[in-house]
Image 1 (cartoon, helix red, strand yellow):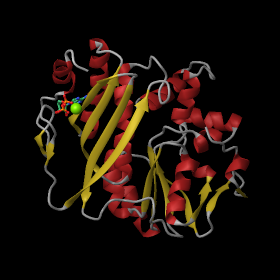
Image 2 (cartoon, protein in one colour):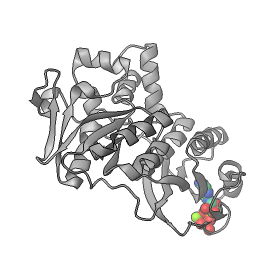
Image 3 (cartoon, protein in one colour):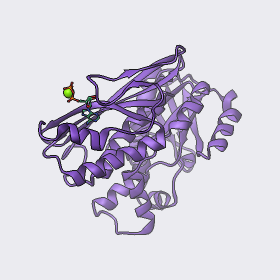
Image 4 (cartoon, helix red, strand yellow):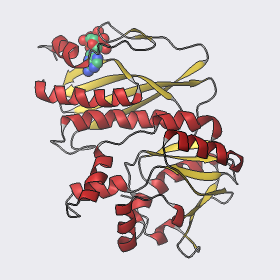
Length: 318
Ligand code: ADP
Ligand code: MG
């Protein structure tokens, strides 16, 4: 992009406030960052393409907010503190009102998560947004998917299935109701569990963020850890509208629905009181939903306490 490229960057992507660790930010050939000596850098990248990852004509604010939220959630799942990100933006045209809204969406999450925009690239073409987010952890303290051991507890933050119910509202598969609108808010404005992630990190054995759905993401964690899990469906944390949905339609929504951006993690039972204390302090719901076992795969305990496979509970890939 040539015409107005530098004005555009200055207006919409140059932030005025001071940013920790940023020696050189937006405006030079590259950024220069300072990492404290006892920290390691944690890096993740995500691309959202119009028509593929979000519908054509999605509000610009929501696109900015969500692409950054998805990346920050990955940092949270590693137990990392979000610090910096770069933005590679491809646009069909430089529409000022679109750019203003998009930038505001990014800024909302920058503020909420303490991450700073330090550079990027701007090109002309079909709308696509790539973010590379960076955070830091104390040396050796990054939490992996591998690390769960038989006997560990399995936990999940927040509630499951709300974003999937919000998607049903967007698609017109359920009628409009206030409870569903709150679910739609979960879909459009997920709140990555940043502080919970780095606060819980020293006490957990494995962690992943729930983007594809509870069963799918727990399976990733279990496969990396080389073990299985028994999950008590009666303990799954559900909001009132999702609970009502489950009583009529079964468990597919909270087990298979994506986009919740909660954390799934495992910990030694000796850590229960520490973990509950952190949850209370942060006002972040943390629910123990099951236990790690040696035998691979996920077994669910139904309402009667009988073991069933996810498919029998109505689990399917969304
Ligand atoms: P170069 O041609 O040297 O790569 P650019 O013209 O691409 O420089 O970018 C100029 C400056 O603006 C760089 O500091 C770059 O990081 C920054 N920048 C470009 N696009 C964006 C963007 N979308 N968001 C944030 N910073 C950007
Ligand atoms: Mg460039």
